[in-house]
Amino acid sequence: MDEARLNDFMGKLVNDMGGAAMLANVILGEELGLYRAMADSQFITPETLAAKTGCNPRLLREWLSAHAASGYMEHRDGQFRLPEEQAMALANEDSPVYVAGGISVVASFFHDKDKLVNAMRGNGALAWGDHHPCMFSGTERFFRPGYKAHLIAEWLPALDGVVAKLEAGAKVADIGCGHGASTVIMAQAFPDSSFVGFDYHAPSVTVATLRAEEGGVSSRARFFQGNAKSYPGSDYDLICYFDCLHDMGDPVGAAKHAYESLKDDGTVLLVEPYANDSLDDNVNPIGRLFYAASTFICTPNSLSQEVGLGLGAQAGEARLRKVFSEAGFSHFRRATETPFNLILEARK
Ligand SMILES: C[S@@+](CC[C@H](N)C(=O)[O-])C[C@H]1O[C@@H](n2cnc3c(N)ncnc32)[C@H](O)[C@@H]1O
Image (cartoon, rainbow, N blue to C red; front, side, top):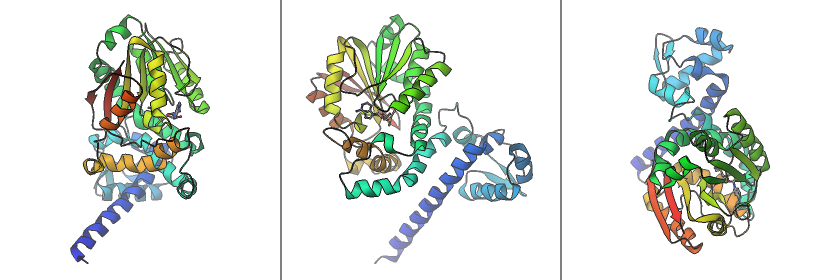
């Protein structure tokens, strides 16, 4: 037994326990509007924050002290300040690095722990719709900032000839659209194109329809309950999968259906969590987050469906290329990437 290694590992675990406890505090701050009340990055006392937010001053002092101890806030003479950089991640929902809203995905792991115990002891299946509701809203809020920052500005332009088609008027399907964040963003940017989102989870389709109305695009972005292997239409210019193909039981079957539903010169946009091709190369903070989430969400969802391939959220480009080649596509390439996503293009 190497005592130094033990101490290192205990330090890591205590750090992780503190991190998990802090995430619960972040969810509290987000829901109560505490970060938004501190978004001006000025020093504030617990009492003034209590007056601004209607919260208990003694509990706020404890919450603020936890943030100071975590390096999330600065403190001085009993006052606390949320620095501008932290405000971008925690207070400003329009910022490209806003994470506070998506942290409820992590909360869902704890809510769903008993269901995972059963899945682990059984066939591994836990369907998307059987998760705690905070997983659905958390997923939308986790992914939307990245789509807003990159989809129109970088990802679509990285595809061969797609932006010109969207500007002229194209027909687009967004498969596994969830709450429709990606669909609405594209519909807002390309008023002459028409967009249809399909998801097999009916409550998500209802929320997506509402999001299109809120976003002023309900005339050109419509949503339907539908499975990735059987949705209607055979003349799409663009078929998209945003962070969902690996969640499906039969990704090859889904890609085959996309092949049949695309025009001959159509394009598949496949957005997947960033991953290298081997576990050794995914031993990093992003790989850690996605493998952990995939244990609770993506892999059990895939195992709950026909075929149950169980790609997992760290499939990597080589494995995804194989899916599209088995489905009949001849062209497959990495169009671009971000620290969180691989952006892949498939063509017939
Ligand atoms: C991780 S979420 C991504 C949602 C959305 N694309 C986004 O980026 O916010 C995965 C989505 O895939 C959907 N899904 C999983 N399997 C499906 C299938 N076989 N057919 C259609 N949708 C499916 C789930 O219901 C869920 O909404």
